[in-house]
Length: 141
Image (cartoon, rainbow, N blue to C red; front, side):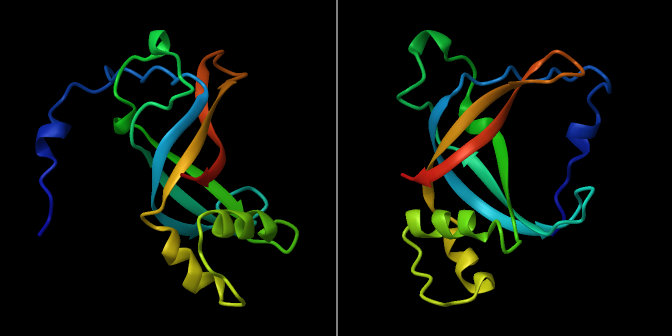
């Protein structure tokens, strides 16, 4: 059954407000899924995790909280090269996924639904001068 998005497409174009950057800190989150790609300029293969936030992190000051962080979606890429796979192994281990020589294509599915602590960082976009967010570390909750 196809979803009907017509009500969303009837909004006036060019007037959407960009959400304000979240304060830097550690937030509770969940890994929603993953996909593979190689769309970067060097065509390096990667696995991209979709991450949703579950609320405000304890490290975020009450005075800095505005909006609803659960409506924000983030992503984190892990390169699939011999020099970088250790980072993916660390995430698997930290989330309690028992790898023991199993193949990545099998164990990656076990990360979906994992509750994690997501380090949200701020960065300055050099072209626009705007503050944005990116994901730093992902640790088991």
